[in-house]
Length: 100
Image (tube, rainbow, N blue to C red; front, side, top):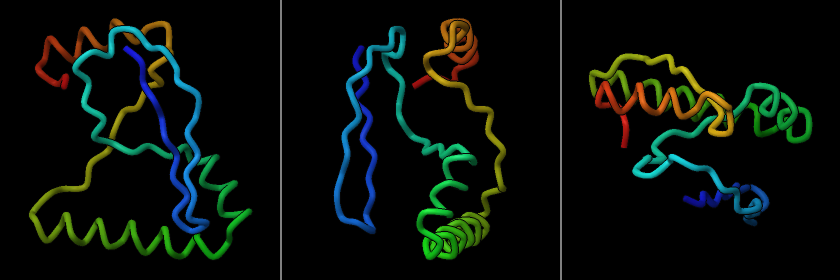
């Protein structure tokens, strides 16, 4: 399976498409989460300080909306899809009905 990753930068109003990477065993995976590495976020804050407050406001709005819907705050475990053990993790997720 080929996974095409797009990065969007709405403030500057342009889109950058990264290279197409080949990752095996991702068949049936639903891309339903957005992950931002904290170091990348820190770098973006340094480059675009005005975005810091906007991002914090967005996070706060999402948190309040989830509370309004009766949803709890979640903590997630994230792995990179190119890790050598990813197939084992995928098998565990499938076995427990958390794939797709």
